[in-house]
Length: 113
Image (cartoon, rainbow, N blue to C red; front, side):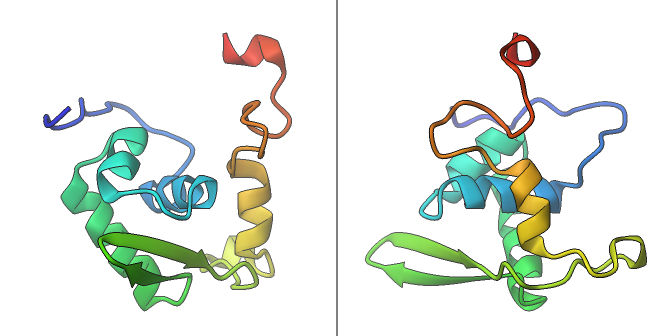
């Protein structure tokens, strides 16, 4: 588990910033190591992305002992002009896993196969 994730080649629909934000939305107490494994990124890349998101005001964290608890700002508007008016909450409504762990909204059982 200590290895670097296998790199992905080719293009994807989501940025790494969106993936990290969605992983945090799924678990506000997730460790950087777990986020990195989930998103197939290095821990250093996840640390940088979290710092970017915090600096821009999309995310904050509090520390309790050795655990970080992240807080997402759901009303914050997305940065790109093409998404003008869309909020973090609207993005996460599509990306975040549902609470029952049944997959992503709009996904059917056959999609998970």
